[in-house]
Length: 265
Image (cartoon, rainbow, N blue to C red; front, side, top):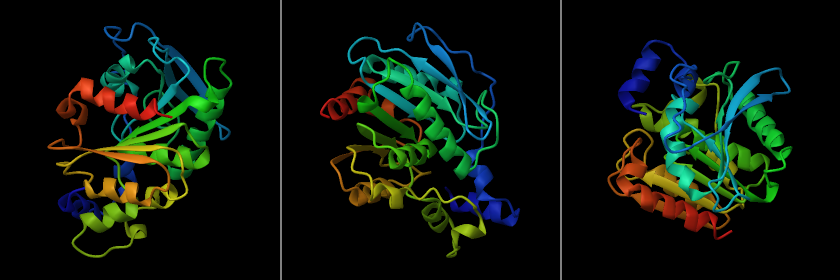
């Protein structure tokens, strides 16, 4: 987060929570079949009464026992994230893309507590399917979705955890984005303490981050890896910013990095 943006938020007495989530509704939700020929729409009910929308993309054949849960960033929904799902499709895993509460076609308003409920409900829903193997779940979170992926890994260990361009905590974002030393609670209610959670996660952990990311600093990637106690790998993508990591890597290398890590476990 830029210092200028944070100061604007403070000057307007706005909470950082609204900026953190910034959910997109369902406009632009048509999903192309150019790369992915078919998908299944899922409706997931949460214990607190929300209705979540997700899509299930069946494996293209290489490793149908693996299911990758993809968690998008703050200003995305499934439709906007579809090009990334298309990048991942040739890996041959089942892919589940989730719109948590408030995003896309899902009901509700995002909060840390609510999103934690969504993640648990989604995992439980998927494990009721005969084509989803609990032993071969992979969680992939991009940007803010990285905090969701780490939260889900803290709830229930995956076969592998992947984050891309994510932060260590809201407190760190506030500290690094302000000219003065402000407490997190001054501008945000939610914590998303990924650095604290990752210390207790032993699942294999792959971290992807662009070295030129002006929004979520590259240093967070190193801090997350250093705090993780299990097998891990940091892929530093030279020159990539917050939104173009696969394009800078090249799609072939992007997929190779993911496949070689996931397939090792």
